[in-house]
Structures are given as structure tokens and as C-alpha cells.
Length: 379
Image (cartoon, rainbow, N blue to C red; front, side, top):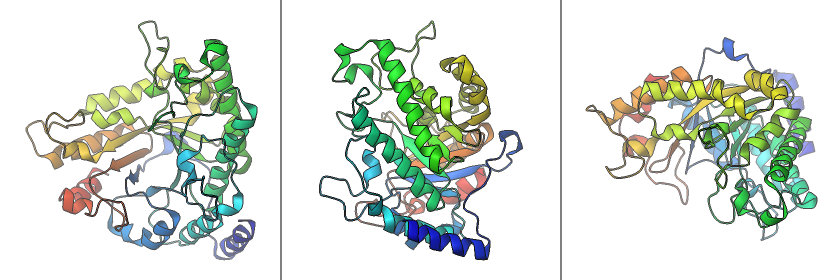
């Protein structure tokens, strides 16, 4: 990776390409960015092969599933889908991925400039109190940041959702050593691990954007504003507080607020934005609250399938007497209006990227005619 980065660095210096930039102050932001995610998220190779096809689509960036090559059989070909594992990784496995990403970043005419490396909290079976296991998780984050930086990405999308057992990393009751430690012990340890992760990230990419599908806004509290125990994201606030403890001032965090999948009114988006900007600071220790206000941004996720799902589906989106496209337009406009900068668009029934094995075979404008124009209009 070092040789590839040196070569591209020389090219960048000669032709004036810049892969890093200072993050703008939220108050100065006038442009909102649409990030494509979904079942068709590209690998670096497909990203390189297909990024020019997005010139006529309403997106500013995408999530990328970085691949490994030459890894042993027990390592996923997309290792960052299992970043919370104790398996040691080799930097050289990602040389080809970095090379492919660098080729895209070196194109000054590319439209997709706000791209992220996707990192998941699976398999989630790493003990919070196990120094050796956590050293590998921290190293996985450092590698993610290094690849993102060298590949010209803006940062990392962090998805803490548990998709299969035993991946509930942030549920205290799901830990195998739960009986050996108090709630306070777990909170302290999660905060420590969060600080270790961001120290590793900032060592190679201090101005990274960390966009989280769930953040403080995904945590349930009781009537006295205490975190409800034994829930999926019980330890996530402590982990994120560790982020804030050590984050450099140029690093940006985004609460992507996946709960917005079900929002169907402008007031729902406005209320959520207010909660993220003001109420959620209550999760944060006093010493970090100004950092939260300065460095946390409001984002929203939109779930395209909801506008096609039938009545009875938990994600069914009522058209409110109008058309499905009209409802989508209204909700995306609300997301744009109330976000600080980022809106991510997720879908499973269709694809934006050219077809590949395992992806939906039909493009979104076939599955949901008029969707591209609708999204463009919302921007």
C-alpha cells in the first residue's frame, strides 16, 4: 500500500488533486450530500468500473465494501463487514482495493466525491475486557481509516447493528462474562474502547467523517432519561463518549438516524433533528458536551423499499392520499431541510450500480419509475 500511495501522491502533487480537506463549519454548509447505500454497495473494483455511470444520478457519494485478497479462508473476502472480530489482518491484503480507490480519486471530473468505507460491528463476540482481542478491533479501525485516507474517501460509515448472533456487541446482557462485571464496569470499558478506536483512526486520518447509522439517537431511555438496560445499543453511548474524549477538532461525527426510515412528516424530521442537536447531549459527559455541539452533525436515512412495501409491512409508507413518488419527494425534502449535511439513501429491491452477482437485477428507475428525477428534485 505504501508504494501505491507514494505513486498516487506524486501524481496528485503534479496535477493538483487533493484527497484531504478541512471540514466546513456546519453553519456555513449550503449544499447537502446524498450517499447511496443498499444491497448493491460496490467493492472497490466495481466502484472503479462503474463510478462514471453516476454522472446522471442524484448522488454525491457511496458506501464501499472494501475487499481483501490473499487472506486465509477464515477471513471474509469483505473483512470490514466483520470488523469487531479478534482475527489479525494483514495490510497487504488491501493493496488492490486501495489502488482501485485511488484511481477513482485521481479523476478530477468524477461526480462521486463523498465516499465512505463501510464498517460493521459484526461478529460482536469480542470481550470488552480482553485486551488482546480488542487490540485487533482497534487495528481493524486503524486499517479502515488508512485505506479510506489513501483511497481518497471522506471517512467511515459505521453500522453498529447486530445482524446475526452473537453480534450484539453493545447489549450488556448478551456478553458472555456479564456476571463477572458491574454495569459501571461495562460503561467504563466501553468508553475506553471507544477512545482507543478514535486514537487509532486519528493517527492516520484526523479529519475523517464518521457517519453512524445509529448513534445516541438509537438508544431507548426511561421516564427519568436513564438508559434502558438489556437493549441492543445499551453500551453504544459510552463507546461514543470515548470517541469524543480523544477526537481531534477536525474530525466530524454524523448521527445518521436510521429511525428516519419510518418518518412520514416534516415535523418528524424536525423533532428528530432537535433531539440530536440538543437533548442527546444529555448522554455526554459534561467535559465533552462542547465537542459534541461542535463536531456532531444531524443526518437522516431514507428507505426506498418502504414506498413499495404493501400495507401490513412494518415499513409501509402511507402515501397520504397522494402518489408514492410524491410522498417520497416530500420526505426527502424534509430530510434535506433538517439535516446538517448528509442524507443517505438505502434500498434492497433495486440497484443503482451495474448488475453483479447477488444484487437485485433491475435498476431503481425500472422498479420505481421516476425515482431518479424525484431525488434530484428533492435536492
